[in-house]
Length: 221
Image 1 (cartoon, one colour):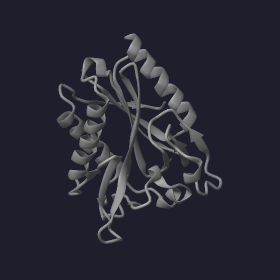
Image 2: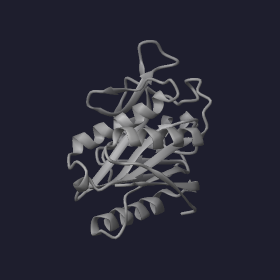
Image 3: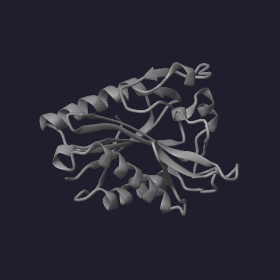
């Protein structure tokens, strides 16, 4: 049970990446491919999950918009944000959707702790939140989670804000949440680069996913 961590260079186009991810998930289910975690950045794009409502798409302007099959509502992806697409065979691990999402949350919380950042959950709101650096007594979202599970094979995954242009989130009501903002590691004063975040994610994965360890594979996909 060894998921390879595959780092994809450049800005991955969203529709093509989702199609490739779906194909890989299907190959895992067919027994012709291994589990993988893809680490990448997208060009600026707005994506709506299965719970997204038109009213929460506020002002997309010229940002491409895609409705997608993952769970969740609207989010923004773009440069400076680490997206991790996680393709695991839960039939060989723990075939439990809630346990899987909980473990993804633990993964992010553990990785953020590497930088001295305390991440927390909010009941009924998948994703990870931190104390706002700009508003007392408010929690801001630093990482989003949106997954799809097809016959116990997972795809889609998580997005962590390292140092993106947070103005991209102004186009939507992120994840339908109106009582919290959006922040990033850089806004919290963390000077880490993407390689440091990737290393934290690899190390944290080993801690929270039982019987799993990671290896790095470089790809130009």
